[in-house]
Image (cartoon, rainbow, N blue to C red; front, side, top):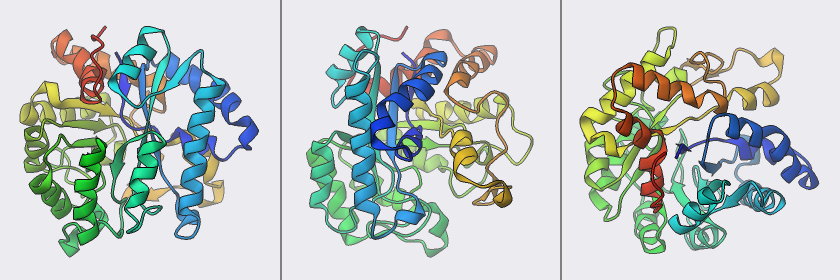
Length: 333
């Protein structure tokens, strides 16, 4: 089982005409996922700035519809899954299991009943914010404000738990993560984060955060975005260092991978005249060699094995842990 907790490919799918959504996925993304050996892919619904605030709900629904059309138009090779049993069935049949998530909640604001709507549409993971401030919480870019969850954010935690939807703390500000960990009664996930004690960036989790997530029975998935791994020229060894730190703090059974591949997204969306792409103090076009997209994921496994990680632990980090967190019982290959 190879599982990736974060790939923004829906943003590119939704840029195509609706009649092309299923075919574009099959032609462009399915080969990449298969080349990378991906069995389970979390698909975040992220609404870019040009759609906020007025168009956030409409664009989110378009992306959810795109995911459903991908699954319906490619039913022989993928399945949109809501439960662990559905993940198991998809993987057992040789298909890739797709799981929907919301990254940030601009489409929700304080209308928390819409969380139930998105859950009905198949969303299984929700994060409250991106880098900035939302109606529910502050992102890590606002850490200087020291803000915890808003009143609506506190209510949203309880609602998501009652819906059986997992709360994602990646992108949440430091005080917000602490607040979530005080409130949580169910396992929490960080879908694409790195270790602040390895590289001090506001986007990364502190040691206390990692331990706290593990205490909930949750999982921390290592981000492969180079700018959050190191200020040096990035290598696979930097990825290994963050995996090592999470494993030391939380145990290898609480660690996964959340790739956050954005090279193809930037290549299509950002004009050449706007390069380089500077993003939260990082150059977004600097990549870990070989990790431009899903086909590079086996390199992470090779690096972990070369660093001396036991094969069974690597298989778990590679996907078994995330699959189990999402309710799957399928055994690691």
